[in-house]
Amino acid sequence: MKIEGEHLLPATRDRVWAALNDPDVLVKTIPGLKQLTPTGEDAYDATIELAVGPVRGTYQGKARITDKTPPERMTLAVEGGGRPGTIRAAGALTLEAQDASTLVQYVGEVQVTGVLMSVGHRLFGGVAKQLAGVFFKALEREVHQRADPEPVR
Amino acid sequence: MIPAAFAYHRPRTVQSALRLLQLHGHDAKILAGGQSLLPMMKLRVATPAHLIDIGRVASLRGIRLRQGVLRIGAMATHQEIEFSPAVRRAAPALVETAAVIGDLQVRNLGTIGGALIHADPVADYPATVLALDAEFTLQGPAGVRTVPAAEFFLGPMTTDAGPDEIMTEVAIPASPLRFGAAYLKMPNPASGFALVGVAAAIGLDQAGRCAHVRVGITGVASAAYRASGAEAALAGQEPTDETLARAAAVAADGVDANSDIHASAEYRTHLAGVLARRALVLARDRAMASGRRRRSASRV
Image (cartoon, rainbow over all chains, first blue to last red; front, top):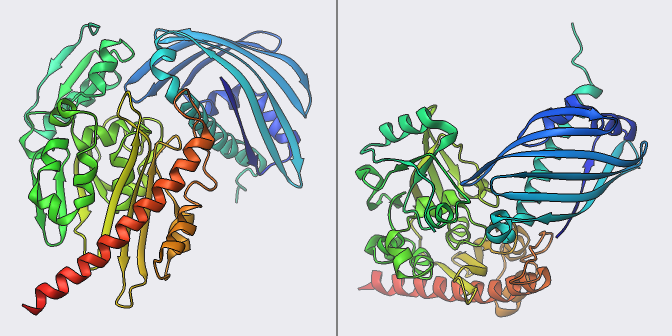
């Protein structure tokens, strides 16, 4: 299943790139991310706890940045699973500077197995879109905070 | 098809249900009819350790029409709504909606509060509660709050309601003079869920122009939404077949339509326009008929 979307962030491309590569930022922005442990260069182990309606699960996964061209583009491979099923995804993020803002576009191919797929296939695309929306909104808050630290008076 | 083990609780009041919910937190799930939750538990997609059945909470039942507001207890079943004289009088489009949900067994057990909180993107009620400007009462540890339908549906099975809140009531303003509404859907032939469902509501002014227009759409996007473009296109207009058709044509504009094995995004978008036109025509005809009926009644 293909998922794609885009989000305009009100920050420069360098700033957005830095945020996307900062584990501290990712922990605060990825929905349900409980733990992110670096396991090597551009490789992480992640634990995600998500509840979508009555479907609650803890998912263990590995994420690897397979290719990156700062501050324009990175490709990612994600593999994970939990009780409701497994997910394998590969995708690319591209950052395009637009004046003082940055357009982030994502496109990926996701494979889902288990009950997650047999029951959830008609919901999956929508859930992915919704979670991406939550992530980008949180990311927007993060880059904004980092960009304009509250002046101390 | 046997669910994982769970503890079953059957509180008698909202307060004790909330206490149980707080006590068991992440492991608990409210059972409000169970017509979506129980199949998911049988497939073990959902495995709550605690099930809090609010079916015997008396205060959540009952349907009242008072001072121009229809108040439906969250645990009213679809069947109770379908046959309630108060709903028929104050919000006939909701009767029309309840009547086409699932099958008879589902309508006998499923509840409006359960269906709204579950927020399946292809469920029927969301379109109609959006078109009728419904407001939901939620009760949680922090107290009671109300949320308009337009701010409630956030994504697939995702709403503004917190995991520690219980929906207690659905309030709908009783339809005034010269007001008509309708719900139409194209059901998936296998599941009965809406491939696309459209609820339209039109209120006419003295001159017969659209003073109030609402279009709620389910099944198209990842959450039910109001077709604000179609609503705006009709504001202040005379509701001729042509203007209604023009408004319906933009019913899915700017919407990220779902694509799955049942229907492509193009198909859903097209269907949204077709059903929006039919629902708007029906709503207009009913609004005009309601004006005539009330006028002749007042002359007697």
